[in-house]
Image (cartoon, rainbow, N blue to C red; front, side, top):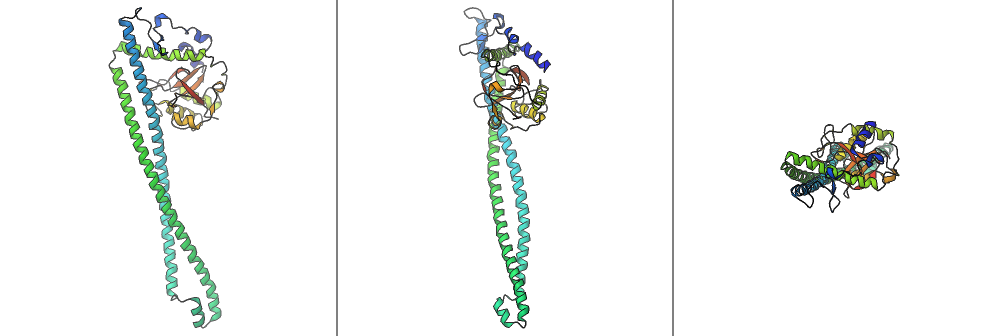
Length: 365
């Protein structure tokens, strides 16, 4: 955590005096705001010119690329959710198949038992009890036999009843398996559609970046960093950190340790380690290391985990971003998060306020 604090200071992500030195990037940095509050270069010639026009073009490219990756991240969440549902339905179908198999075996046993009872009745000639009493030489013996017959009849009724219930169970399992299969196929199609959508968006973003020269790519990355910095600074200036003083739980410390040890590993959509991660794959594995099992996607993390107020946030908590809950990062303290940003980037530390916050959830209650 001490090393993390050094990194945060260097990046200007801490509150108080640590960020004061970075509050104004200065005219030489090229960071400013356009009318929409986005970062742009201020290093062009006064009144506009080739440099200013080039910065404006790169800023437009940055926004377009960011939009494509945002849409890809939304599709990634849909893909992860559908994949999770496919795995769940597969397990349910396997469970139902086992139930069907055991029920069929039980049904076969009951049918053999019912057949044996039917054969025994046939051997008795099928005579009713009254006729056998009149024709028999040993009425007392008959009465004893009648008691056994009644027990046999009850056994027959019991077998028939069991047979009916087992057949009903078998039909129920078969129907459930059919329904599960339909859901499985629907989720498979949804997964395939999301997968195609992700690839399309990422390919389009990569195509845009590939057209840039090396210097332009460096400038583009700088524009991204400037934009993130300005949003973080605005968040810090709002006083958001003043009331936040929570300490990490023991589980939270383990989760943070895992997440920060992944810094530098590539973002890959749909990945959950050990070598690559997407945003929710990182938080999933981090909290598994902390001893908690949490949902796979950022949207389900938002919907299922307990929510806490911003002022009660503590290190280890998960910050959910954007109105559709399509991104997540882990709070480290001092106004910073560790997260897997997007394709083409690596797991990194950035400002907690560098993206629009939807809310905070706590995996360890």
